[in-house]
Structure formats: structure tokens, C-alpha cells
Length: 118
Length: 110
Image (cartoon, rainbow over all chains, first blue to last red; front, side, top):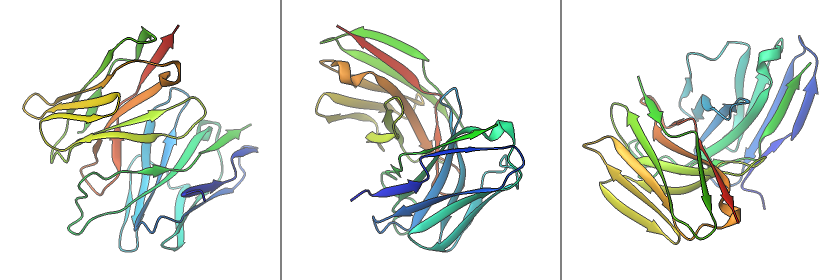
């Protein structure tokens, strides 16, 4: 079974559209993330979320919003898509130890969603 | 702010040893991690250093010097399948997300 799965794998859409990417993890982790990887392979955190706290990277436009129906799911909704949103979006999860400072903070990534905005 | 610097590209031949360096600038240090990413694939965890010294995992080792804000990933007995991008990362100051370096592309030739 895939530990972190995200759908769709590929997403091609027009500027101005609204789209969602779904993510599910079956690792029992309590924290999930969305990362964006641009064409230069620069990997940047967008959001981290557990059942208590949403932390947003301040550089993320408010057109992006995470939605978590439960601990195992963290979906990403994007409004009014722009050309610059074209990238690979990775969902990830990790287990946060008591005190909020995991010993290793190993993050498990999904396979990625390749978004192309035309 | 938090930032990490690593070389953009490294080339080597099969069987060789390569070292990928990483210097970081951060507050509230919680260790240095390394991730591998093959083209078209997802980043996967390789190694972690929470304390100074060397950590060994098979052909891969990672080193950390907190006083120098420096670490490296050492890959031995290189194989073609080691051709990939390698990222060093530190925990973000707020929350548990990671801040990644820009990645080092390793090309292994025969």
C-alpha cells in the first residue's frame, strides 16, 4: 500500500480555473504538508497542518488553501489559477513527537502532482 | 532568515566517492537531513544528523559540524542509480516543515 498518495498525478488546466489536489496518508501521522517544486527543482514549503495548527508560509498567495477533512487527508485547493502556478506539488506527512520537536522529522512524500496552467 | 547552500552539480564515475557539502544559516537548529530525488520521482529520506559527527547508512554517510554550520553527504562506491538530486534540509523555525537547499544534481557515468 502506498504510504502517501495524491491525486491526480497530472493536471492540465486553463488560467483562471479553480482546481483541487487530494492527498491521503495511511501512516498514522499527525502532521501533513504541501510543498511546491518549481522548474529549477527548488522545493518550498507551502503549508503544514496538524489537527491543532495550520502554519502557512507567508509567501503563499491566499488563492491557495489547504482543507483537511480528517487527520489522514490534506487537500489543496487553488483558486484563479495563474501561469506561475505551474509546478509539481508534493504532499508529505510526518510524525511529530511530544513537545513538537521530532528527533528526525522524517517526511514521507507522495509521488507529486504535475500542474500545468495554460 | 533560514537558508542552505549546496553545490548545484557534481559529476563522478562509477565506483568513485563523492562528497556533497551543505552550509546552513538558521536559528533554533534541529538537525540536518538529506533527501534524494530521482528525476520524476518524490524526495525520499536518506540520512539525518542531530549531533556532531558521522552517521553511516550503507554506502551513504552524513556528517555534521554544528559549530561550523556545515554538513556533508558522502556517497561511496557510486552506482549509476545514484544519479539523482540530493537536498540538504533543516527544520523551519515555525512548525515542523523543512527548509530545503536548492539541491545538488549528481551525475554518475560509467
